[in-house]
Length: 67
Image 1 (cartoon, rainbow, N blue to C red):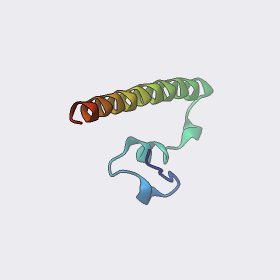
Image 2 (image 1 turned 30 degrees about the vertical axis):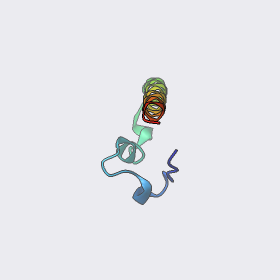
Image 3 (image 1 turned 90 degrees about the horizontal axis):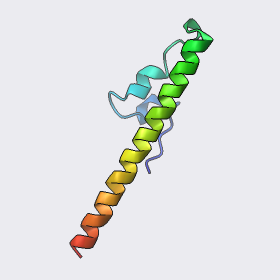
């Protein structure tokens, strides 16, 4: 897994949505909006973890096939 220092913008992939998110002023949002944002971010983390797992499974299957 790649290690990114999200405090250092140069470590962020170009055009990464997290780059824009980390500079957003959260003080403008209500508690309810921030809670909804957190729920959405956690769901996106789960979805991303699933995609990583699926890619890993596909890679392992391909490596086994071509041995």
